[in-house]
Amino acid sequence: MQTEEEFKDFILNGHLHYIPNVSIDCAIFGYHEQTLKLMLIRHRNMSSWSLPGGHIKRSETLVEAASRNVRMHTGLDNLFLQQFKTFGDPNRIQFNKFDKEKWFEITGLTSWEGNWLMDHTISVGFYAVTDFSETVLQTDISIAECAWFDIGSLPPLEFDHSEMVKEALHTMRLHLYHYPIGLNMLPEKFTLSEIHALYETLLGKKLDVSNFPKKLIALGLLNKLTEKRSIGAHRSPHLYSFDREKYTLALKEGLVLS
Image (cartoon, rainbow, N blue to C red):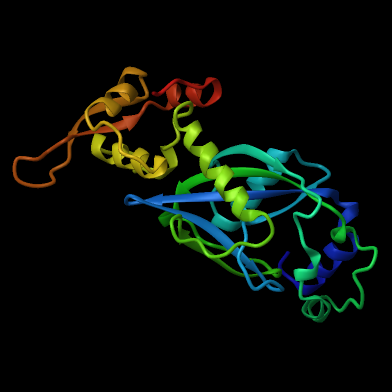
């Protein structure tokens, strides 16, 4: 939604095109140079930040809705995307926190009474991972700001989104042992030290510097290249790349990395 008219039509008639009472929220994690961040948005009628999200079109699946949402905010397609939990507490959204006068000013409406957006809504949580340096942050008519925040210093979040972030981070770290997350966060050719640093940052803990990369090689996920990277005197580590076929298969069938 890019215009006031589109936004107003969504509020008045959105239930004709979107499923009422169900939404998706996306925890989009970004990695770059051993730093882990989280993308947050601030709606025009809210003072605090929240996860990006939205409603599900009647014509799309949950995954399609989540992919659309992630693409809208990052400008990127085909990111690693996983559902992590559903949130449905009756008081999860406190409507009294909305600045109704500001909404009325934006939309031209005079009352929210009976509006489809004001009912109890269940949210399905998804998380995605990407290299945040490759993203182009985007907003729409309802969003005032969109920004990356360090995972260790997040601002106060609206609704139950602090719980969502906690659950998303926990699930992502569990999935690291069962899915080859990393293709979108490393250059096409990388050193073992770089993939080691990636996993340490995402997991938030130290890994054995000698054994961990060997496990990825043993699983057939990495191809050792003839090329080397010169990083200083007497230091020219070999470069590696993901085996795309085995990587894709591991995403579908899973793996055990422990």
